[in-house]
Length: 333
Image (cartoon, rainbow, N blue to C red):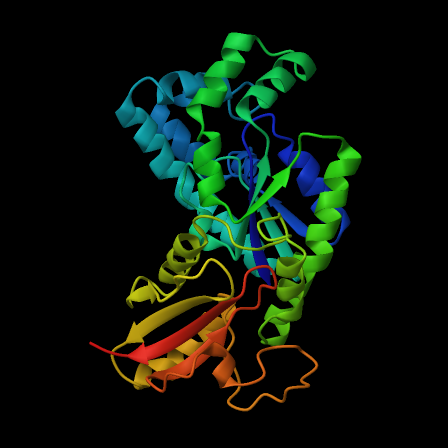
């Protein structure tokens, strides 16, 4: 399963992009929908919240009175922290259930505050619906009828444009027409997301020909892939998170072109076999010791493609066709 995080500031059109991805076969897990589900009448969390914040938060119809809860829960930092401590684990567990139950090849987690909550490390890719704050402000005022001051306040409470761009792997510009955005999503799906999902399912590295063709055409840095500032830091953060912060991970990469080279250090050879399935699930399947040059999956032709240093005891290459990465697992202190 390819796990995608989708985010964007208020007014960016994130729901539009989620719908376009759903049309192409992705399953959408909506964080806002889950947040409403877990406090619906009959849900255990509703009683827990009433015990913590008073029965007045229960509306006449038995549901949650959100305005009353907000008035008491956001009255001071301690109450706000208590609300989060009660709600977040339930939302987290319900979300994990949805992922576990899904049989889709691509699952998109639609999360408004993905960057603010530092969730980007938990996905194979994080997609940002990228619309400058000033454009989003005008949309909120013009199309949603929001008061300008209220809209400005809501935008200011979220991460700014630079923070989102630094945290996310793929930027989807949504400043034009719906048709223009649909064309971008189409291309992203066809050239990156669908192949990435297929490679994950097959346990094989991505083809490198597509990346080379994009670089030759000057397409690097587009929403499809290519090198962007922060790529090395983002992928190392994902690897550290995905391997439980257990092993040192560094980049031996200094070139702005070609595959990013990453080294992961383990204490002894016994760790390597156990670690391999985890790396594959994170999007880094092993490179076969002698992959034929004409292999249909288009992965690296041999281990020489991912570094000839015999100090590495396990070599992996990523399944993402948009950003080639060569990962070497080494034994060290």
